[in-house]
Length: 322
Image 1 (cartoon, rainbow, N blue to C red):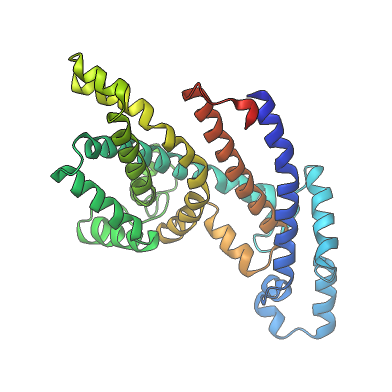
Image 2 (image 1 turned 135 degrees about the vertical axis):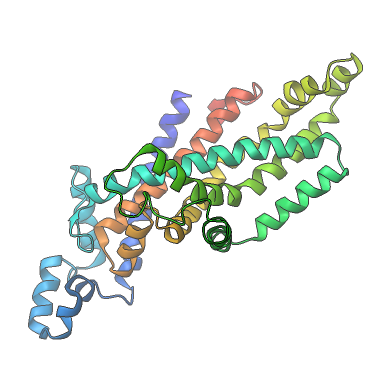
């Protein structure tokens, strides 16, 4: 495991370099003007000399390669730069928002895995039954539903129509303190919507994996020996059927991040979504590069975790070959 982790870490270095360079290259051809975004309405009455001087102060008069190299060398020294749109250091921008995005993603991902395993096992228990048809139909329907549409529907139903859950934010309106109870109640809707967006994949993969495992000789032998159905399902079939699900962990991380950005925007969750949107529209090079590096690291870590778990649960896998 240590060797594979080391190899993946070495592989991650050129990946991050290429991704961050691409961010600066794409931002350089963006139609948005970072100077006008920084100056705001004051840029409307400013003369060209003032705008050129501001452009030089912000460093956007240089080539994208020069800006990337300056950001990279500073980042290696622990300085991620200063966000022009947030008017504060990038480390503070990420530090204030990352914890809430991580909480949202962790709760949603855990809920999706647990619910997906339960529904997948119920569907695989009797293939072709009414339960199986209902679960698979629901999974395919949710898979086709855009996450922002599900979020808006949840706001209308649970917040506006029934009034049982808050529509957005982190705390109640007018509250000066952030309490665990308020955070928990405000987390239910965004985490639930994000979990629903990931649920179909885990449900369908578990259903297929458990269905295939139930047809294997060891499982049929366990049934022939009179072992209880619960033990057969969760002790034998589920353990074998979960192996394909482990590969989903790494592949679902990019969509989880994308879905989290949309969910945070709909529910006004104080994560990194607002910072990402503002950084993109204002062409905030340091913040864009830092957020992209963070997302790239999350995807690489997810793939590494999936491979490690696969090697732990399947003794046939040789981690030295991965």
